[in-house]
View 1 (cartoon, rainbow, N blue to C red):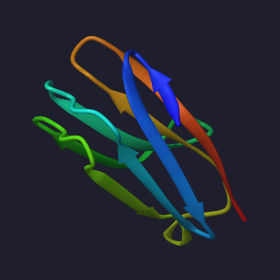
View 2: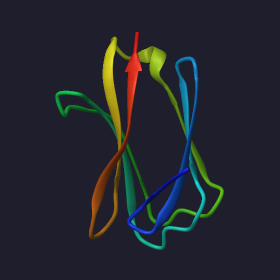
View 3: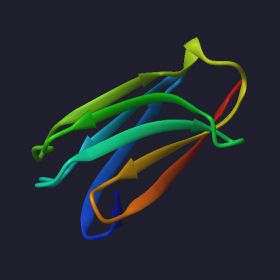
View 4: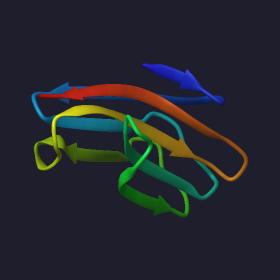
Length: 87
């Protein structure tokens, strides 16, 4: 479990599948990004609010090998939570 900017997140990885679990509500617009190590956005989804228990799944087998980062962007902050190696 990771705590950042007052929010709780949990990550689960099973092979090429990554699951991001929101443990608390985000009562603000929140954008989730998957970025390459070079900073290129390869996936982006925006939510008006996020409810506690909401999940977002990534299938990384669609992407080239290398390092990826999950970014969580709110109305007044941005943080990057997890580096993932895709073989």
